[in-house]
Image (spheres, protein in one colour):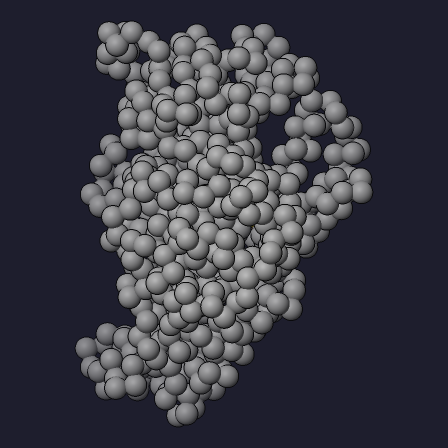
Length: 568
Ligand code: FES
């Protein structure tokens, strides 16, 4: 590192066995891009661009990137845009989670190996944000993140609608015969009216808030909508801030502490955030070498009730939360439990930031208060028991309270394909008191798709049943709702207890006491465990083999673990 704290374009020379030649040939190629001597005295700030024709959520990214470039140039840096993988939640088969670690790996290596002194990571759609944070931490260079921002909600039947909670409600109303084909098609034209990420507190919005709380995105940046001028001003401000962070050598390692993660978990609870964020937070903490476990997330997320009034836990949308002042005003509400000494990439602590942002009394439309919350119970609960010795998750704020204490007989589906084939079979032996069980949808089984909110069987939906207890080793979309137990660890495909559940077995869900139990004689369990076989639908491609052999369990963040073939 030079005395200016940056290396510019001539850092990390390509290895040709002759340093002089390496410098010369790099200069030759930079000449071709029109760079001049003055540019070689500036810190190079990379901008990771995840624009893609497949990612409609990133539709406004080109203009956002222009604003980031402007901010970097104004502050004396040299912006250089480079493309990376991009993960369109709705377009990837079987699930974008299959590629989160690949994107993290690719982004990290591009930051590490290309000559940039600092970097702005521009993401938004679900897995892109955690993948970029994981990459940024592992690469170890100063980095900041700008998210695409939420889409603007649409209107249908004189009410606000937006992806994706309302997509699910519309679909369930259609399945239950409450709306027609034509109405479904009509609402479908209004659910995603602009670019930007899903406009409820789904995974994208949750991770945007978490990126802000961890200090990687500037204060107030999670909530302005994608097409707004405010979003562009955030781009410019971030551009200026990353140049300062780079010159100050503010690496993620200097930023993150255990308290940063405790704050993130607290906010996850207060926003009624996506269960997917649990997996991502565990993986991010591991990348930062900070001891932070499922129990920590439960403990800190439950210190406050859900106070952000966004679907699926509440009734509003991200624009409502933004109108209340977004994350900084949320932090004003929870600051007694929030560690204000944690640092952000702007070089300011959260204490400095909140002192400069005046408190506003929430209206209740997008943000409520601790005394008058959206739900008085915490948003997330970690359950243990013989079915999940290493833990599983339920989003209590999106569950039906009376189903949270429940005993029912299992209706078992061996895989997602099996479930899709039989769930609507009129002869399926199921009642509203049954517990729907989905196996082999965990990390090794199927890359953990968001299939955990199994559809209510058509014959029950037609009778008006809207929720049932559902359990699986899968994930659930952050925009979904219901009494849904997820992330069972260890998963069925590596021999977890879920693999031996049979039709008719009794299962007890006891959310109050944090338990989930298979009520089967221990001797029968022993016998079944010796007879079960393992199942995975991960493709036998090069990445599929690497993924399947080295991915960790949900309770550990599902990152690639060291030790190839550990799951064979
Ligand atoms: Fe991209 Fe919801 S599909 S954030």
